[in-house]
Each structure stands twice: as structure tokens, then as C-alpha cells.
Length: 263
Image 1: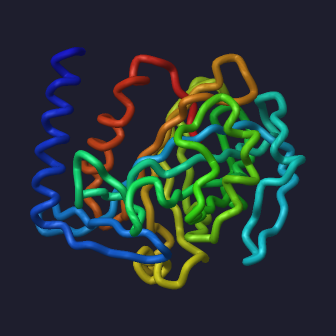
Image 2: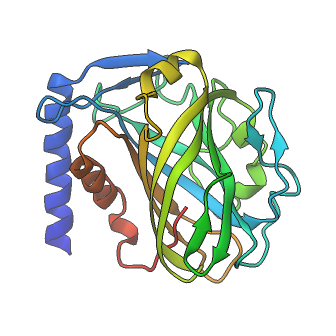
Image 3: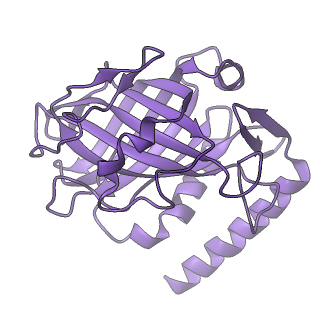
């Protein structure tokens, strides 16, 4: 395992170095990031941390018509069919190739903004089976960071802070494939379709199909109704799948030996 970790870190450094040489910089909605050029193909990649729980699905409606987590849907319920997978989190990186050793996607410098995440509507209909037809995921930009520097066991209490920024992007789920151990642990692969948010962000990510973003994620409940330390990785669909798989492996080395549950 030690050799694998060392090789992965070295590979990550080489990937980051090569990306800096060929990446193009994009900016939208207060955020700036680099595309990654692999064999001439441009794309955007990012990592996410989140906490999730099952709720009763009592969501609200935001100022732009997007679904939102409310005080009621913030309450965790027992895992199982009939519950709606719900969660909050933050984006940790967004193709931060401009400075590999001190990366930031904030246009005004490190720690001057945050991109937070809220999601829900993933209805559990049976063991290892979810209905994503009404599922949603929102990303918010906030130039006054207040959600916190990391996601922990009490992040669910900051559901309001996760949603008090400007709606940066809103997605629905085109697909949601869950491979798990009941409701306790597993992995997910999902495709997201951008449907709202900042107009410049929509222009950048809208690929003209229902598959704009490819998301992989994992977590586990640890015999609680709230997860802790859940992680994920996403890429634009135009980015080769190998990049997404590599990024997830590198980001998830710390939890790779544990059983996991999907977002």
C-alpha cells in the first residue's frame, strides 16, 4: 500500500505539472479554473467532500426555483426504502492547475470564496436501488465563506450556510447507478445535467446532452443516520473517463480500505 500511495502521489504531481503547461483558464460566477488537456481533449475536473443522510423529502423552493434543504429535510431518519438521500458539502478543488502547491479557484485568492453543495431527492425504493427522477444537486458561490474549511460529523447543521450563496449551478440527475452493501455502504456513478444557475456557468458546462457531468462518490454511515468523511470526484463528460477514475483513486486513498456508501 505504501508503494501504491507513493506512486499515486508522484503520478498526481506529474499530471498536475503537465496540465499547467497546456491548460486554458476559464472564469464564471466569481470562480476561475483551468481545463485539463489529455491527448488534446479539454475538460474540467474537481473533488468534493460531503455529508449525507436520509430525509423525509420535505424540500423547499429557492429564489430561482431550485429545490432546497429545509429545517425538516435536515433531520436524519432511519436508513431504508422510502427515504430520500440528502446532503451538503463543499467543492475542494476545481481544476486548480494555475498553482499546484497552493491551489484556489477563487478569483480573489485563497480562502476568499467557497463553492458549497446541497443535494437531495434520491428516493430509496429498495435495497441498493434508488429512483433519481426527481433528484437534484445545487452548487452555490459565496464570497463570504461561512460553511467551514472541512466537512465533518456536524456539517448537516450548516445546511443554511451551504445554501446562502448565489446559485452557481443547478443540476438534475440523468442517471444514478448504485453498487453497495445494502444502505450502509457502496459506490455511485452518476451523470448530471445542468439546468440552471449562473448563465456563464451554464454556457460552459452545457454540452447539449443530458450528460454534462460525470460524478463518482463514496461514503459510509458508520451505524449512524449521518455519514462522515464522504468524498467524490467529478469531470465534464468530454474529459476521458480515465482521468475521473484516476482522480477518485488519488482522492480516496485514505478510505479505500473501508466499506463505502454512495451519494
